[in-house]
Amino acid sequence: MPDIVFPRPAGELTSLLRDIRAAAADDTMPELGFSAYRDYFDTGNRIRYERRYFRRRARLAARAAQALLDPDTGLGPLADTLWSVCDEYTWALPAHVRHSADQDRGPEQCLDLFAAETAHTLAETVAALGDRLDRRVADRVRAEVERRVFVPYTDTRPLNWEGYANNWEAVCAGATGLAALALLRDSPADGSRLAAMLDRSRRAMDRYLAGFGDDGGCAEGVDYWVYGFGYFVYFAEALREHSGEDLLDSAKVAEIAAFPHRVALGAGAYAPFSDASERPWLPAGLLTRLAERFGTPPAQVVPSLHDDHCYRWGHLSRTLAWFRPAAPATATGTTSFLPDLAWVIHRGRFAFAAKGGHNDEPHNHNDLGHFILHTRGQSVLDDLGAGEYTAGYFGPGRYEYLHPSARGHSVPVIDGRVQLPGANRAAKVLDYRDDGETIRFDLDLTSAYDIAGLRSLVRRFRWQADGRLELTDEIDAERALPVEEIFISRHEPTLTDGSADWDGLVTLTHDCPQAAVEEAVATDHQARPDRVYRLICTTVAPAGRSSHRFVFEVR
Image (cartoon, rainbow, N blue to C red; front, side):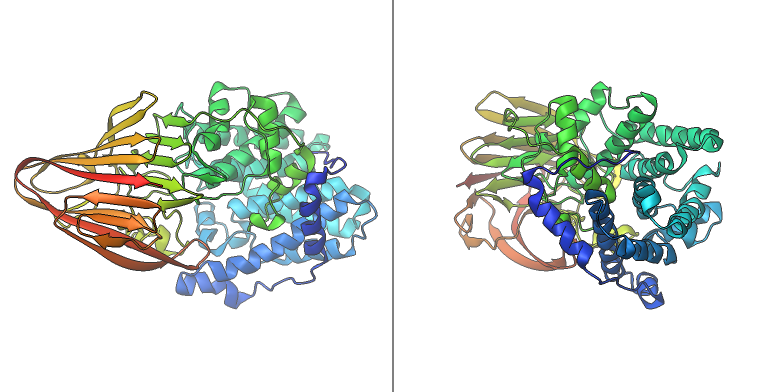
């Protein structure tokens, strides 16, 4: 969007415009001093610094949007905000500054997700305002974008994230490419430089798309689909406007565009596998453009400015520019099977989701064979989604944290041992069938474990749309193996002999001789207490073949 034009806002944007005006009027600009910066390195805590950082980005995005929506807006407050952002020690987050080391650069030239997004925000704002903005501010912004982002991007040495094939490729390369289009496209002297930068961004987009299977499934979940695919689309459409090249003209891209609708559980909830959330926000502008290009369901809700706690300019500006009210599309089918991800989702009066995959996925959780039961707008047998991001959460001790660990998923513990991480720890899909009455989904989970005497473990799901799930674990063992069947919920179950009841929403019958409930309290993605109940049904798999059956009824 080199020439930003916000059309007359639709009535559906009224609440968003109110949010923008309020945020633009807020004079709070938190300091990012040394004590805040050092916090992550000293304690591993990310959120205290990041809350300050993103409040600054809220003010930046809101003031930029207000200036472009209303030509009569005085630009003094925006100029001060731009100047203050240029004063920041680094535009990267402390957790990411190590990414600059590969080019022997300091934190101020770390090209991470947020440095690229900041450059994009500043570049499009300055380019769109033109002579309305004080030349001294505009010149400083251009110089800082050049020094902090364009210099490392035009260095031929690889950047740390090149090769990730996940959201980093799309966001870093897309936002940097968008910034380059905004600032360099009208300068003949910069023509070859711009071409080289766009070519680097194209290559990153190729790697990003290669990270998807042909089913278009995003192993990182809907939140990261919004993030990575959103910036892919924003860059692709700006490139199409600039050169006519259309990166969206692809059957695979069309499949990726449909992903969130295929993993919907209903009423705004989505399967939250991996570091995702059950109720992600979906940018209205992005959904509008995808509906126009691919016929996917259009936006029916315009999120609040504050639903994106990072206040990304890409999402906000494209919602203001692209959103158009549209009639609801034909409902997505009731059942989705994504063979590359090995995810099954059924939605109706009740919803069911289960997954295979492997235990080295982006934002991986050790969760092969995990499942969800959803009713009355809530997941009762639950997936915990993302925990609080700390240094340790992405370190060698990741699976000591409840959310990504096997302990935080509805998967068995055998002989006291949980599932292990690694690409070789993979579920094999033995069968998937949907005859209109029953969904059959069978997974061989043997390789997820490293247990002497375990010959095989097969998990079989039989789901019926009326809310009945039969779950059977078939174990072939050389010796007797103790088995703990774990079932995860944020609802505390009531136990009686051979049964469990989660608030009258889901009931379970089983044949295990023992059952107990363990309460665990972790911290969720926003560092809030997250109370979790682990139902542990204990039994023994004797030597030879045995079946362990569990019947859930959803109400």
